[in-house]
Image (tube, rainbow, N blue to C red; front, top):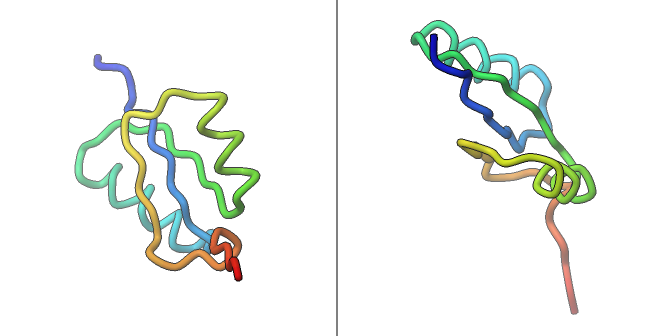
Length: 68
């Protein structure tokens, strides 16, 4: 049995994260998914793990940095 894919999901909605996780499972992928929704969480996840796949929501408010 192959090792599960390590999937990082950048998503602010837990419901959407669970939908992604369910979709992967229903389509035969064995995956270990983790969700982040903040810049600090993203930095920590990247530093602590080596990911096979990163899926990102196109709009995660806590990750947008506005600089003047």
